[in-house]
Length: 169
Image 1 (cartoon, rainbow, N blue to C red):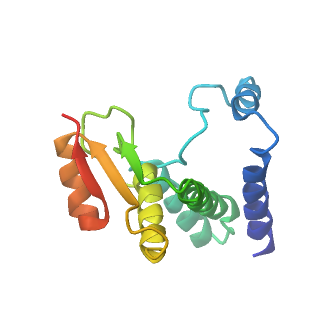
Image 2 (image 1 turned 135 degrees about the vertical axis):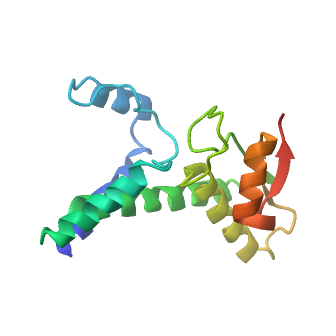
Image 3 (image 1 turned 180 degrees about the vertical axis):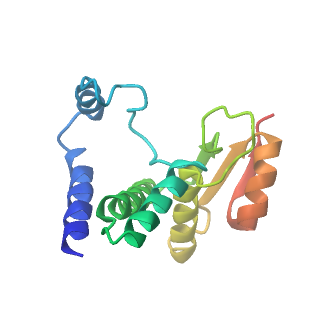
């Protein structure tokens, strides 16, 4: 759909803005709008967790069922995926010996080991896959997930040996 493609292109174009803009200043300016507010406007990983991604997809499904093209929710999901892929590529381009992802539950400091739709894990997995494909470049590069034991148990169940693990308890 052309409209969805246009929205996605705009979202991808905002990634290029990081070269010329101070991300903190841009987000502070957006947060001045009382309809938006500054509470959750921080640069970093995309949206995740058990609620918003699920609700966004459900909204798209209901809209489509009602005959309304769900352009915005689909573009939102797709832009979130593009953001994760961009971050993984930026990490890979650092050519570090290891990349450590800490506090990977969907919400920082979350007492529940809930990793559903964790954007940190999404980026970590994309990075690990990319490094695995490039093994000839550097066999020593690795992706480390460092977290509490309960969180690591959940990550191991979901991702197996894709990562190295370090317990922080």
